[in-house]
Picture 1 (cartoon, rainbow, N blue to C red):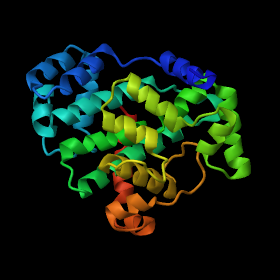
Picture 2 (picture 1 turned 90 degrees about the vertical axis):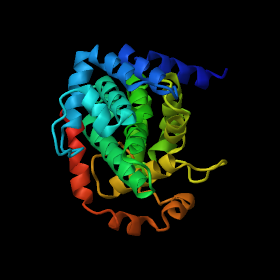
Picture 3 (picture 1 turned 90 degrees about the horizontal axis):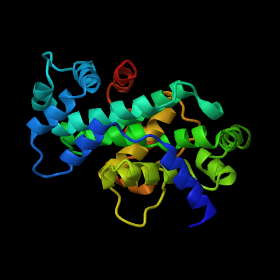
Picture 4 (picture 1 turned 45 degrees about the vertical axis):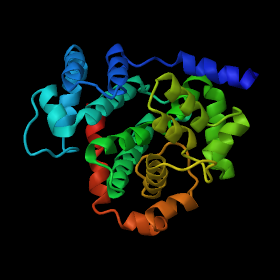
Length: 283
């Protein structure tokens, strides 16, 4: 094992694991025969998680016509997969540091991540994904830059230098990270996603979200997160440290049948959708 790989492994190992209830939820929902009533029992045994899930389900983000008063009803109205992904989202946000080490502005980072999550979910629905499955796209967007947080926490001096290179040299943060650290946040984020035992499609999404060309077939969730990441940067909703304006990769443009400007303009109520993401900040 190379020194760099060992260093990356050590950083990932230092990151906290998901709470026991979330790990149990992931294990249960990975089974084809997962019974909703069993999932409900696990969440109900975690009162804090239960309260936060109900708060989100009843927020403007979902815009339901009636109030949901129990996890059981939540599963019925928004789906098993959505409840699972809300638990992952809540757990992830609880792990984020309140202040930004290495000069990484955590408030802006969170806005960018939530904006990417919301637009990725919206784009997924446009491609015909059901609302329940579209929350996978939300999680992919929320976690796509999680490797930056790990770098900022465990190699703050190197990450700070990388962020400064972005400002002074006009290069992408991924390139600056490779110069200063030897790897980029996508690689590290993918390793963390594997540790958390997230579904394979989400691991790939996090690992490949800066790839302009893929060796294998692209996936809908990956293409939606790539497009959403670029669009959110274009409208300057938050900032995760990368100031370079990216172009839409050819395979993503082909997926949507349009280039970046047209795709962005085609999203109705973009500002309103981004504002809904603030519901997650207030949990």
